[in-house]
Image (cartoon, rainbow, N blue to C red; front, side):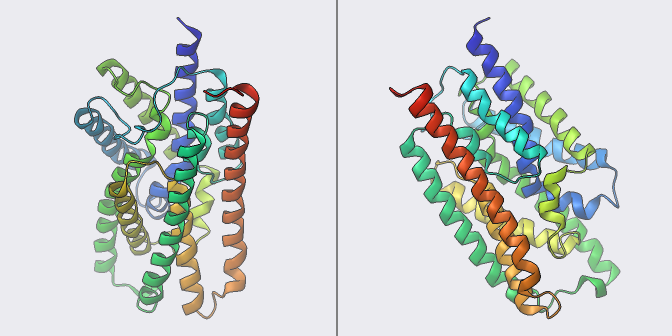
Length: 318
């Protein structure tokens, strides 16, 4: 077996674990936070796994074997080397520290050109701003009417069903974006045996994430106001899914869904702090600043990887 094939599978497994463990909090974090008291972890895992298997398989069928939904058309397949696999290894370390970094930048930076990375960055900045502004405008209005502590029991049941439905849609929309961060290590057209390997690996990794309750990354969600409630979770899922769908349809360029998610939570927290008297900006600012700082740290790590690969390891270009 060629060494590049070995690195390909090592990189794939590292990326699969790191991407799912780091980024799944964006889509499944509120789902876990609001349901873990009502359902066992394996029930939630099975539900999320069914949607994941469907989404990956759907992409494989409809995109001629491409599980990345055509989002890697600007990043052609390359023989995987050790420095490619190093990117998800760094992501793995950051995930263990609870840092919500952009897997799109950190993983794809090892493969993409400067031109593609620049366009990815601009799209992600626009996504962050659009999510923050949308969330602020929506929650300034909603927060004046939402008080789940006084909600009727029948309404709670309705919102819990709604949360499961919107979580499924969001999980589908997110996988369409971020499967590219895993599939970048693999050929763009997978054989059926490779598809089975991908499905088995990702379902097993997702099971571990659910078993551990989301890990330290889950703190990004649970320290936000009201995210444990089914109604808040449902609305967050709905807004986030709409934003992801819009940018997916905009073009095939990868973008940081982490930045979009952090932007959404930032706008939401600012809106709530402007409405609720006992939840003022002085309490919100440290939370927002911490998330933003970690986001910038992840971007810095991505830039460092690009510079090392393009200027040190391969100074004459890929």
